[in-house]
Amino acid sequence: MTISIVSASDDKFVPYLGVMLFSLLRNKNTDTSVEIYIIDNGISAKNRTRLSKLIGKFRSSLIFLSVNADIYKNFRIDSHINHTTYCRLSIPELFNREIKKILYIDGDVVVRKDLSSLWNIDISDYYMAAVKDWGITSDLPRNNSYFNAGIMLLNLNKIRCDSIMSKTITYIEQNRPAMHDQDGLNAIVKENYLSLPVIYNTMSCFFFRKKLNNKLVYKYSGGPIIDPYMIHFTGSYKVGLLCNNPYRYLYYRYLLQTQWRWHALGQFLHIPSEYTDYTKLKYKFLKRYQPLHKLLRTIKANTSKTK
Image (cartoon, rainbow, N blue to C red; front, side):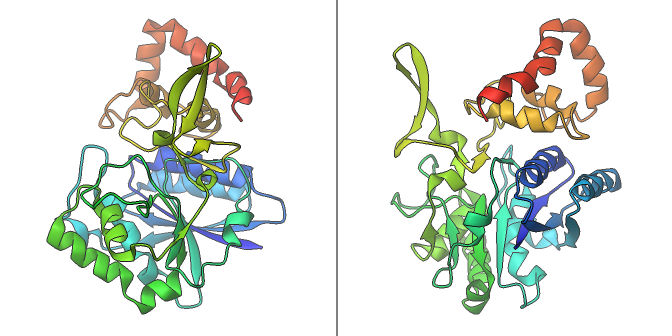
């Protein structure tokens, strides 16, 4: 079986993307082949090489795709969301008609299991399959059909046939919605998608702390989350100190096995993204904060309890 995966990234977001790809390939079954496509919105040559080497270790294919992001330059952005998020609206036009289905995954995701069960879901009657999002603040009317666009199994043929992406772009141009292209997709697709179990997109907003028998229990409004396939670090804090996602340490476990391992220091301290020289940060902060050094050395051991 061959699964086609697409994601999008700029250069600053590559460390997250690297973790997602590493976890995806590390946890796939041996009889599952993966084709990976990356929409390149300014990834440096150095990081392109690093990504290629990472994928090569698992003997999977990697293709970088170019997109004209200028068509989105006047679209609304926020502190932690830039124009790269809109690049996924270009997905149908980036692939030929022979590719009828593709799985889009955001870079800020950790994959815990083989995704064959998700890939095999029949979406022939839907534009896509996605997980409902209960934790969002949107300009759209509140209802039970609002989905998260961070992980989508896309029916490219049906999307092309009904010009879903061009309609979404028009909606965004006219309304400048608060949640960017996700609001636009929800406004156009409406209920015409297949709702997936939350295990296929377990978002940080699903977790809250509730004390039960002197222990912290993590739940979301629909009940306990058991053995999720994909952990989605939504929100502006991602995996920093203020992140409340109990799988945060699993993210660091994978990150420390990639070439972006010292990016962990800036993420954990929630250092602004413009400070990208993590080599200097490594020596500066590890010298001043010895407990951090111990923390980073023991992350791998600690995460075995959350996997």
